[in-house]
Length: 207
Image 1 (cartoon, rainbow, N blue to C red):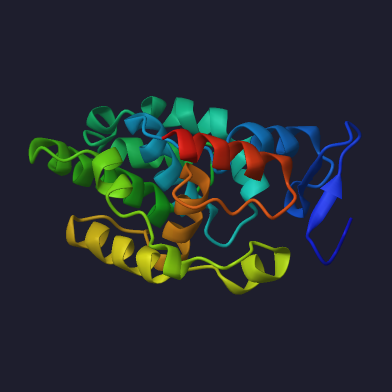
Image 2: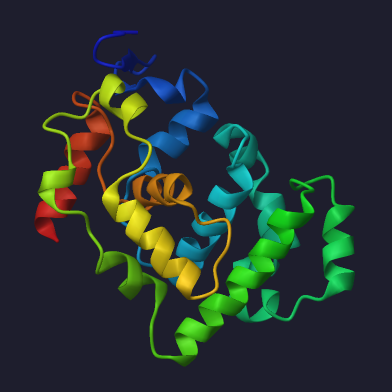
């Protein structure tokens, strides 16, 4: 690993962000998902929920449980989750395939209801997030391992957190929302020299 630049070179010879290590599963997430622009409503809601469950835990732990989360939470269909009741909460509390945290489970149900409220008001998650792209003045001149370690939230993530809470969301603090911004491609936080950073920049220019 180049500690200064925050890069590792994989067995395929490609330079990647250091955090995915040499785990093929984690590398696939890094290469194909993290930072790629997302507009799909189900995927956006799933990311919000899983970022909330990740709080205080390793993201790789959540990622390895993701398929089970999808089964447990009705494919992250907001209309179905919004109808979950106390029996569903108790069912989920017994499900060893997910993170059994009552507050996070209840937050997922509450957030599904909040999204339904947005839909009923004519607002989508994609519209909400993509209308809040951070200005260039918020972004570092270069994205390195050091800048990422120092920057776990931003003025935009604070505003997003506040706006979502006004809509009834919970477990959407500024740090969680910055991680969401990274994951859904609102910011490109692949470090300089990572091959994915270049490909995302090309897509961004095309958009």
